Image (cartoon, rainbow, N blue to C red; front, side, top):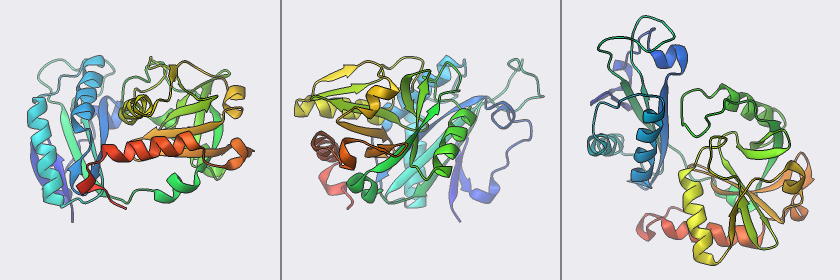
Length: 284
């Protein structure tokens, strides 16, 4: 049996009780984060916690503890579960109240739940690359908020899975935005392209790390949108996320990217990203 961080206490999983009137359950009224753990050590946790509080602020949800307190509780959860390599999922909902669409009036306490999951790094995907498919982006217009409203992303991911693909590359009209659970990058003529961090995409933590890696290896970056047609003409395409790290895309809707081979710049970015993981913690 595992453990769950429930509000300000770590309890056995079977002790957690979520009310039928929790606003996260009924409305998706809340925010979440996924934090990578390498060999028991949390990666970019400060950035994840900062983004969690920013997302909460954007939906007018006040998190009832300091960032330092939340950091401490998450660290205790990782130790309690003896997590090696995997990730932490955490979410805050607005809390429990009688079901009405508007924010509840009176004293309502946000509800925190967090748990860990052990999983190995998908090294085969990093090495061989993955397939993707284009899917129309039907999500709401505040994708910069990491909210619990994920049905649009879920439907897109399911369409990808049904086509035997790893990821759905989303597009609004002809313009590529991001993946169903990743950020999308393309490389053309020695320049790295990715959609600007506006309301149409989530500003991924791994996305930010990869942009730093590009600067460190001398790969110029242009944060500007590109089209579906331009994506297929890229020299290299890859996606990033907390769990996907830097995953090459070798085909989209059965159209091969650069003859279906992982590109040299992608390899360099993967290698540079690896250096961000403390050497004593790298897991092969």
